[in-house]
Image (tube, rainbow, N blue to C red):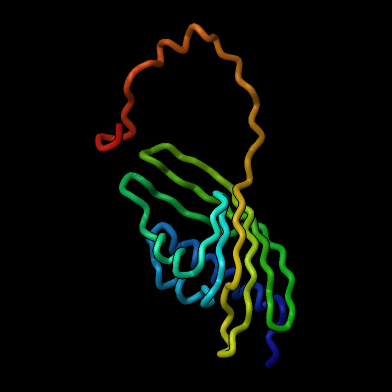
Length: 156
């Protein structure tokens, strides 16, 4: 039976979600399975990593951090042995009780390998910034904020 383009895209979206779920745990095995040898990963801070470099950096979130990333709206281009997925990913990160919400635009290029498996050969991740509005501040009130603050008992 011939697999439809829609089925391939859904399979790769599920694999992408599996990779994103593995981030908080620092699960290198999932990323190792889906990243092709020699793949490149460019992310929002301007770094471009090889598969080996990315796996070396991947580790569980530190104590006090909890997070998840969910694949959102997706567009795709499907060719015989290449699929490009572009999706907006929604991250929820809780740092010592403070919730941060960030959206990322991720574009992945998946290629069918000689063994028939799909693997990521290239990824580009960009943070989507929300428009910030200037705040009006009474400059005299800023002196009341001077001092030492603690994020947690371990972090001052």
